[in-house]
Image (spheres, rainbow, N blue to C red):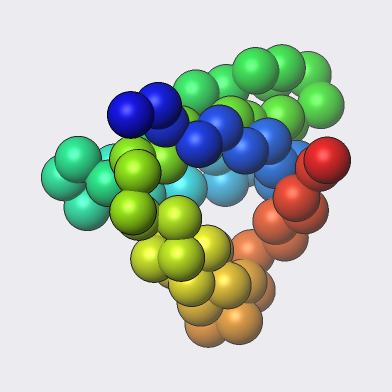
Length: 72
């Protein structure tokens, strides 16, 4: 099975925090920086973990006040 790849724009200062937080859920997803100049990240999500990762991002937006914008 292939990973689901999704692209997001975030605050540049939060890239490290997001990577650490998401990747702390071992095997669920991996974060790569696609373009650091405009703070684009790509999250490769393991099959079956899509809803969990999106719920985590939503929680980080609400509880940590992170700015995360999903790109098409």
